Image (tube, rainbow, N blue to C red; front, side, top):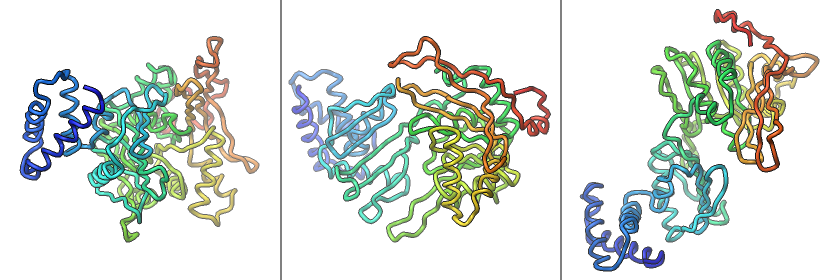
Length: 412
């Protein structure tokens, strides 16, 4: 059976089901059985491989109760990202590389229906008055939606798939992003409550690294996580509060920002605050929290280097309080942030930890950095493949006050 014949059959079965079965009165299991029976009748004696029969049933069922074509894409664990640019252009990321899928949605209307179902599940809304929305799927995958007329190519959906197994430091070591020695040092820094910022470009693995690092937080602490759409998987902490932002409704009311959540979290007796990503005026509140006794905070931000992360933080703080003098901002950053871990996505699409640097302090109008580990390429590297490792610099950790406070005598 050709692809066109399969799609015609799927459309015919779906039409028959919607016209003859009371969908609101039957369960998911009953619907699945009915679809299987109707599909068997429609196919009859025609030759149709078992996997194609299963695919036809799945397509009909998911178009009625699921997310249609998206369901089959989301089931493939090798796909890490899905990009839908209108009903006819679907791209996926596998092994760090982009591919176009030879599949498409039946129509723009069908794609819009699926978008409304996704957004509705998380209690959000997206429409012409509010055409941009960040949300998540029931499995935790992060979803960004942009509707026409903002998106000229049709409804645009970008899905960052949620890993079924939480990322651990052990896996990062296995992937070659870290060594056991560096992981042991990071464990000490997290447990000694150093404020750590993870920087990097889009798709460099910041949230993944943050998730792995959070596993080092002692299980008896109270932790507040703050995110645009909840992605962090922290399983070992019982006293955990996860907060998520909310977009404004159609009338423009009801918006809850990361800034609001940080302010609220300070009244919740947190021992640590983890902010999924700072990208605006909330940076000021985050820094103030770090500076007022909430040590051990973790966060991420977009930047091309540790130095760039500092200048971006300055810009973000100015978005939140434009009247502050630059000197005061830099002093605030220097005293709040202890460690910056910089990640990068390299030319061979691999993700590597490029630098671990200490923020030493503020001198002569500049924030002083003290690089502890720097990535160096070795002789096996080439234009198509990056080979190398994080190398220890000769610099020692200078701000060891928190280590001593924690009773840790080990040198970093």
